[in-house]
Length: 371
Image (cartoon, rainbow, N blue to C red; front, side):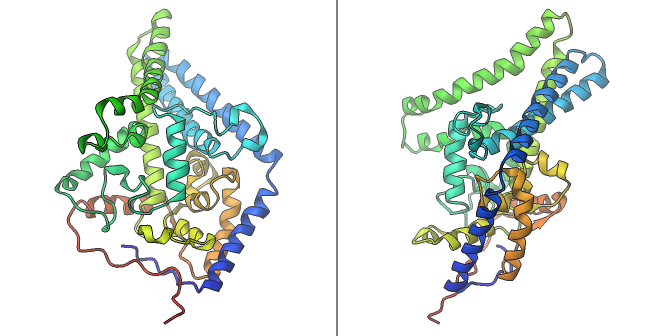
């Protein structure tokens, strides 16, 4: 259960709180322009050139320094493409540029999952129903029990092991998330129906596997250089990207102070209350500008949840204002270094693998003025 000490807001305070956060978005969005366009173009070039250099070095992979550097460069390219480029472009953050490279509805990223599925499970369901139990499928991704409000099952005893596997194979878990395979085992969908839903994902998986594990190794054969270093380099680069992405996303959603909400919060939810839910359902990471870029600026997860279509380049600017507003309204702003936040995530994974007492009622976010 969260230990956060946020103060319940009166209806008038809640309205004012929402208006101030709205104003942050309006003011910063008005500044978006050439600087932001130049930034995302630099990111696009960084992804392409670092990836090309990394793959080139893997063709010299019989020399171990070249293999290590090539693998790390390829992993770097894949991480930045996944986090700062693909994720943020698909949120529509750069649609205003009218550049087909950065179109949120047509961008296809370099992972086995389809962008269409991600736009539904993440952009729509997760960002609309953040941490609402029974609606937001990102709560443990159907694999982990991370809150006492979630029902315990004996299978949860093994979730520390599941968590390691999930981290290593994170892109695969994301790829099949929308399929909700459990429906098949309880008779809610036929095998044929599940297969039809899987076909777009299956095609994307095949393209990714052919690219990384057939096409580039085939080039190595044509160049008469060893194939194994190229295969292993791609495998390790994908694994490093999976681990890093998993760690950043989990630190943004499952630290000790993050709260879970019942479906009842959705009834007549005001803009201010929606902002409160995003604030108390997210957490930030502190770090350097390079670290923020490597995280896709999801180190500013709070600001990302408040303003998902704001260019990520602006989140650091927004964070200063959001934190000041939260302080004035007595709202806990959850932030900390990676090691501390990830330690809290690991604690949740281990703690809630075990049976736990019935969850206490979450603290009220809005004061009841009838009392």
